[in-house]
Image 1 (cartoon, one colour):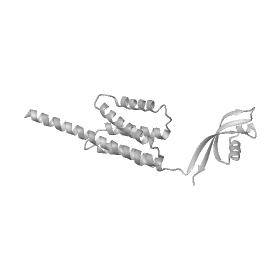
Image 2 (cartoon, one colour):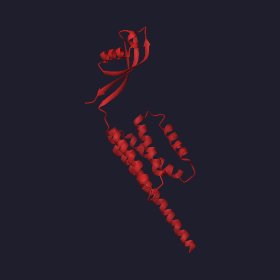
Image 3 (cartoon, one colour):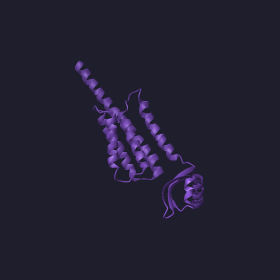
Image 4 (cartoon, one colour):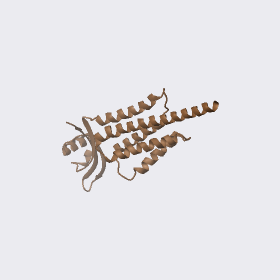
Length: 207
């Protein structure tokens, strides 16, 4: 009798473990799909990153699920994923936005793989995914009316003395560029060529 109970308990444990993994997997796939296909792609149109982000998320999820079965520190696991991501994306030129999505994919997959599940912990699985998805969607939809831009400008000043007066310098650059400049950072001056190289910060109002 005890043997039968032990076998039955073992089967229940196995079923629970498989169900636990299946729930995590479904949650991860759905979260990745919403993030990549419904939020990232419609706002960026980068088809080549759909496969990359999805496979990266699935790989991190499966790897984290395996690591969860052994005694490894969470910091070590995250460090492993970060190192892999840096090595993989070091050579090609990847925009900061795509890198941000990559880290969201990695973080979401780690959360889905390692969060403790149970009747009292479903909120812990759903809530982090919702936060990430809502945050990504909100930032994609947010379009500031006033845009601040930064550009390099090489110009010939009316006098090098104007460089000592920021207010006069801003007005002179506004006259030259017809832009609403609010900040100027002088990078270098060339007295022989009568040239000044500076960062200019200006605002543009979107229609």
